[in-house]
Image (cartoon, rainbow, N blue to C red; front, side, top):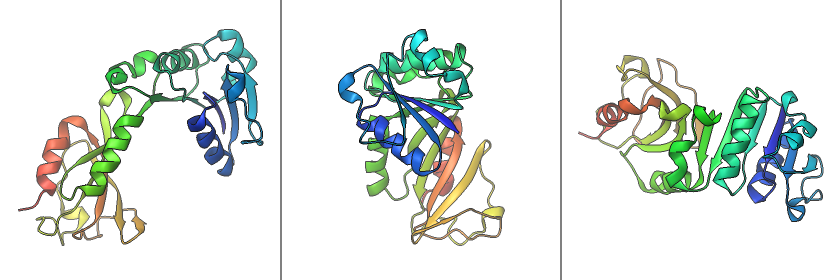
Length: 219
């Protein structure tokens, strides 16, 4: 898979290194010469250019990319890159970094964004996840807020403790996608039993979150 990353700062370089380790082809784009640190990610392609300009994206052959990541520290840049990637080059998957929570509402399909990752919200969610048992924590939002990745640690006295996954009537538009238990990642099957202390990961419609939280809460 070919991935273009607009923004070669610390975040962009870290993403590039992870993708390269997983066998993907990566192009890093940045207009700041100080950000071009080929020695840090030597296996990536590098392009010194403004990712907000069509000519630069032509040079990057963006039409050959399956994914574009807009990872700069400027929300305006990330929105422009996302829009150009989707509308001008038809990139199938566009992921954008949100730097300021007040701008979250802009990062949707109208701007070409398929997945928006809010750094402040994610950090906040990770803090909540670390200290919360029995509370639903939103980790990530997909596609204009229609679906969220949420997490809940099942409390000791939760009514669902001991029940089979397949016997639970989950809310509409809600899917249990993983169970984290004692350092293991379990892909849930109908016969798996829910246990106190399980970290449950769901993809859920935002409107269903309250119902899901109530279902999983302690007695």
